[in-house]
Length: 210
Image (cartoon, rainbow, N blue to C red; front, side, top):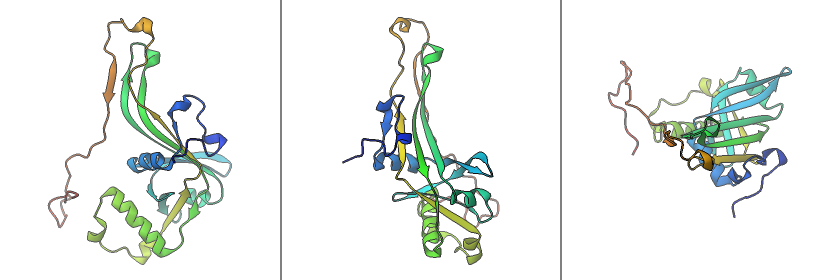
């Protein structure tokens, strides 16, 4: 049965609680659909927030970067907050103060752990490539030991997370409904454009996923 209560007080939605979702399937769908998350953390007494690519395998969210990254080193020493959001539409109301957006968002808390097993690290990197371009991994030049050693992979278990979703149309006051201005929703969708082939690419055409 889907989880209907927040896993912790800080993940419980207080404003518009009806928009809150706490079940794993909803969280996974939003995380998988987003390309970038923002990681907030403390380093040397200062608060930072950094955007980074992410992917999910099971109940874990993964990120990666250079071994020398100060952020990645800090994330295993203290708790972090991860946020991500997808905007699905612009809600244009009759009042400036009733304009809104349709969106899906996730907030997660916890401490990242290091993926230090090379086989695990390689498998998770394959999962990342499969998210970026499904089926591409097998056609790539094999990963070298140098590349693997220079890369840090971290994962965060999604045990303390919540989603917030806004859907639907305009919510204007009844007194404003006769105001002579267009009201409605402008849907937004992220789509891939025409592939741009590198001049020295050995393959001329981008292979479309099956």
